[in-house]
Image (cartoon, rainbow over all chains, first blue to last red; front, side, top):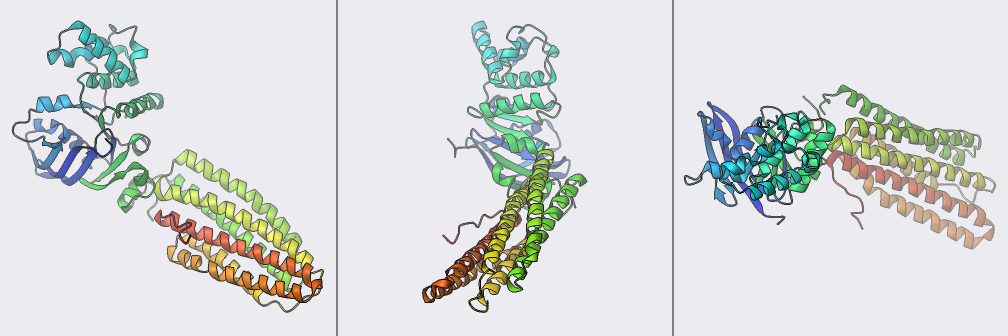
Length: 253
Length: 222
C-alpha cells in the first residue's frame, strides 16, 4: 500500500489568459498519504489543486497540457466524466460554507442528489461521515439544528463530513484551517491523520508548520514551478534547494 | 545567507552565536593557562582556571535555556534547527573541555611535586595540537566552514599517536626507575585528558558539517 501511486502527474502545464501558471509539473502522489503543498501566494498551489479534480474546467481561458493520471487513467481523457471524477475527488475550501439547512441535510445533500433515497442508508452515511470528521460527538443530539449555528471549526469539519459523505477516494483541501483557532486546527489535523488510512489527501497550506505537522510528503511551489518534492522530514530538516530553505526558514533576499 | 523576515529571530540567533563564542573564548583561555602552569611550573594560574570553570558551567545552563526559548518561540526548521541543535551539543562539549582543563590542573598539581623526568617535548606538542583543533573547530562552526571542519577530523589520528607515544615513554621510565611512577602516571592522565579535548574538537567539527550540510558524518571511520 505504501508505494501505490494514486496520482501520476506528467509534465503538467497550465496556461491561464496567456500566463503560464503551472510549469512542467511532474510528481507522483502516493495513495493513503498526505501531500502538503506549500509556497507563497500566487505560486500555483491552488491552480494545481483545482486541476486535480478538473475544477479549472469552468474557466474559459484555461489551457492544460500534459497528463494527470488517477489510478493510471487520464483525468482529461475524452470519456472521463468530470462529475464522476469529482465524486472520487472531494474538496474542502478555505472558507467553510454550510448550506442553509440542518446539519443532517447538509450531509445528505450530495448522496441524495446522486440518487440515494433510502432513509436508513442516509442515516448511516450521516453517522459515518460525522464520525470520520470527528464531529459526531459534538452534534449527535442536534442533527436537525441549522448548520449555520455551528462554530467556525465545527462548520469546517461539517464541510469535511459533507465531502466524506460522497465516499471519495481523494480529498483535496485548500487552506482548510486558515480561519480557525489552534484547537479547531488541531482537530482538523487529527482528523486528516486518521482519514489518510482510507483516503489520499492533498493539502494546500500557507502555514508551513501545518505541512510539517501532518504531511507525509511536501511539495514546494514557487513562481508556478515545483521546486522541490520529498518526504516532509527531509524537506523541513535538510531541504535540497536553497529556495526551499529560504521559504521554510522565513528568509528573504 | 539572507536575513529572516522576522528580525527578532535573527537577533536571537546572533545572540546565541555570540554567547557560544564567548564561552569558547573562556575555555580556550583555560587551556592556555593549563599549559602555562605546566611549562612555567606556575600554580598561581590554577585558581584562575577554576574560577573560569564556574563561569563556563553557568554559561552552559544559560545557553541551553536560550536555545530552548528560541525553539519554543520561533519553531525553527532546516539550517536554523540544525544550528540550534548544534549549539546545544557544542555547549555540552565546551563544558566537558572545561572539566578536562580542571582534570589537567589536578594532574599538574601532582606532577609539580616531583622532579621533572626529562624536558617536555611531546606533551607541549600534544597541548598545541589539541588546542589548535579546538580553536579551529569553533572557528569552523562560527563560519560554517566544512572544509576546515573536515581537515580537523583528519588530525585526530595524529593526536592519538602522540598520546600513545607519551604513554609508552612513561611506561619505559616507570620500568627503568619505580620512583618515576607517581609523575609518569600523572603525565599519562594529563595526556589522556588532552586526547579527550581533541576528541571534543572532532565532535564539534562533525557538528559543523551537520549544521552546514545536514550530513551526519559521525562514526564513519568505524
